Amino acid sequence: MADFALTTFSSKGKLLQIEYALNAVGKGDTAIGIYNFNFLKKGIKAKNGVVIVVEKKLTSILVDEASVKKISVISDNIGATYAGLGPDFRILSQAARKIVQKYHMQYEEQMYVSTLSRETAALIQESTQSGGVRPFGVSILVAGYDEEGPHLIQLDPSGAYYAWKATAIGKQTKNAKAFLEKRYNQDMEIEDAINTALLTLKEGFEGQMTSTNIEVGVIRENRVFEILAPSVVKDYLDELDIRPRVQNTVIWYFLK
View 1 (cartoon, one colour):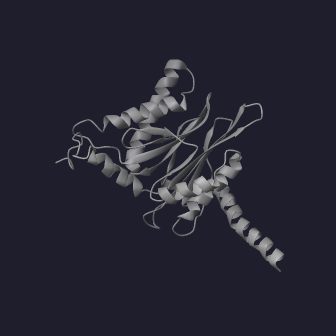
View 2 (tube, rainbow, N blue to C red):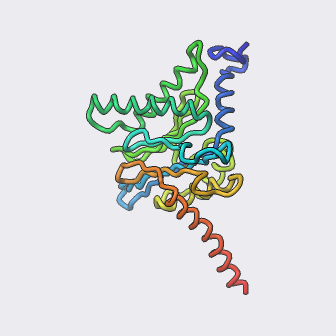
View 3 (cartoon, rainbow, N blue to C red):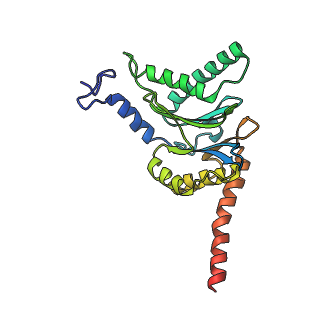
């Protein structure tokens, strides 16, 4: 019975519908996020920004690529991507925009990223203890920049939320996190963070990464979230393709 009842715990103390929602997330396209910051000698934190990169797999070559969006702008200083069910993300991103606008009308200032994440997580959690509904089958990576600096926050179907320096969600989570643990360092610049995120995604990518089957979102010190144009993404991918060839040439030269 616990398999079907959302609000009934199993004998092992689990809400199985949430476990199934997490399974839906685990089958979703991989998304990578990297929170970037540097520490100066005087202990002042120089905050550089946040990068999110997501795989955009199309169900058919007949699908118009421009019609599929995996990264959404929530407000000027906040963006988000997801792994799991796209329609669920659409509903939650619309709800998040309403929360931001309501806050702005009331206080006439930008909403803190942590506050938006907490209120959106509370909305997600309501669906885990209400009759006649199901959990949202989606995990969300929120990237933003406010008075407190840059933020990378993950929201899960249970309503839990976590702040990360770097993380991954979706079907390649385990391998991507292992790769990030080896490559991430807190001294990297924002451009290095973009390249590291792309390399991480490339590790488990099926087929060839192109500017049309991935999306990249970046927020820097100007506190403006932007989704990079395909032409800019192509330049980063071309740079990744050049690096291995240059390294191999140098190794061959010294072995010669």
